[in-house]
Length: 322
Image 1: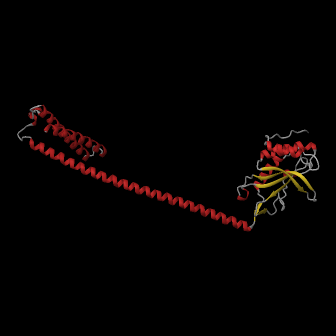
Image 2: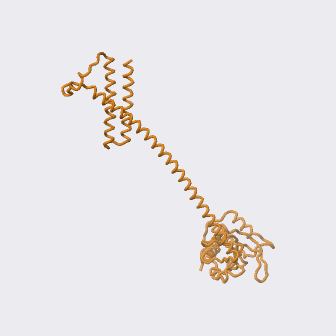
């Protein structure tokens, strides 16, 4: 039954250039692949390089188990794994040799282990020399199998059961490194917490000084208001003592109590009346504050406005008196 070859996105021009040059070479140094298999080899390796950019393509000498040497193509590099262990975090180094009978025969796959590690004892997929034997290789049947699916199968299997095994010395070193990293992290956290606490303490000190300064300003404002209140009360006493005891306010017209002799006197009288009116306003505000009918902020604002108005009229009255 005829089948279609899987289609993958194109690889980089450099990959195609390398494969074209290697597979088209003739003579004693030509690669030992069948002519009708060269296009398939080119296609499989280009697709592998595109799907797994961490795998590079090269050619080199391969030694069979019987001692024969052959110049073959290979894909070599780091195969990314999904395992969370530190040993597998950077991937696993794999080499895929395309033997002379490829693609009818599967490639020979080997693992290279990081320093300080070795194959896990009795690993079901890798022998002590690093040779890989997975179900995908054992069931290889062209054209149903290819290098891209092989690499994906290796990544899944070794993510589930990484073939690494650290030596006892390396395990102790890993534990020591982890303890050192944990200590450094704890020191960094402690330093950050200390710095944050110092910053908070400095902020609280600044706020305390601001509160003290605000309290002093309020005390000075209160003292000034007390002085103004005393002056208002003195003015009230003066006015009360000025009115004749026999006078009956209900029988007198306020406009007839005091009449100015001229225009300048009338203006001076108006200023004096405005001055006294400001005193009355501040007195009323003082009573309202004491009875809780006005807020301190509004009280201070109104007293300041009345005091400015009073100062203005007093200044005008002094000009008229000259």
